Amino acid sequence: MQQRNKVLCVIVLYNTVITESIAYSSLVQAGIDIFIVDNSPTYAAYQDITYKNVVKYLHCPNNPGVSFAYNKAATFATEQGYEWMLISDQDTYLPSDIIAEFNKCIQQYPSIKLFCPKVFINNNRILSPVKSKYYLSKPSKNAPDGIIDLKNYSIINSGIIVNLEAFHEVGGYNEMVNLDFSDIQFIERFGAVYSNACVLDSSCIQSYSNEVQSQKQKLNRFKLFCQSLKHYEPIVYTNRLWLWIVVMKRTVSLCLQCRSLTPICIMFNNYLR
Image 1 (cartoon, rainbow, N blue to C red):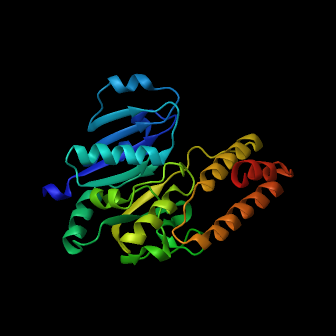
Image 2 (cartoon, rainbow, N blue to C red):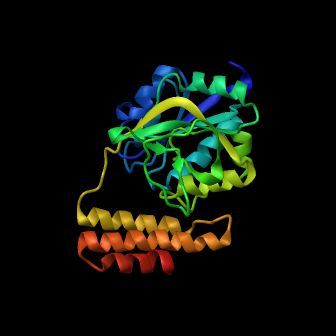
């Protein structure tokens, strides 16, 4: 492998043991170096345990969010001489040949600075990349191939391989957008400098093992959503209108689900104020 293609993978954990992470279990077979950022309130003891291929373990019990984790990993990777970073959450299955596929594609498209796999969810639907307009997208039955225009597509964090020099050039992740829309914010930033990305001929599977169920959990999750969206910085100022529409749609939907006006109060206190 050429030095310029040396890749570090960052996996962000929350309330999951390293060895029970789908991402870790799949990537450890690939022999790739792994940086673990553990945002769990516990598991701090794991920093003293050696895990296969884990070159760095960082415990953040205050849970600063995924954007902080990705930026921290990018700084470490650059300092250690890596030139690319593979991003993953804990629940994504990544094929062991994803790095081999990346190495093949970077030879074909040497000017491309961001690569992404096809990410599937249940019913064989494509979650990423999918067509997006006005910050709205939904799973599709079809995925693009080859070079895509970043202005037209939504790409989730998990699975992307980004050139670290380009990562720092665009400003990395917005740490105030620490959860929801962190991927959309980053891709918008990245696309303002580098207009294209390449879709890998690799398939990942996204699993949602911690879906919230209770009304209390939904309302708390909505609060985090509003707090994250409040700090979104659109490249085009007028896009703030579309962000507001996204928040309002989520607010109305949750009001109907919960048969309560509480989501309106949450939206006002955590997004508008």
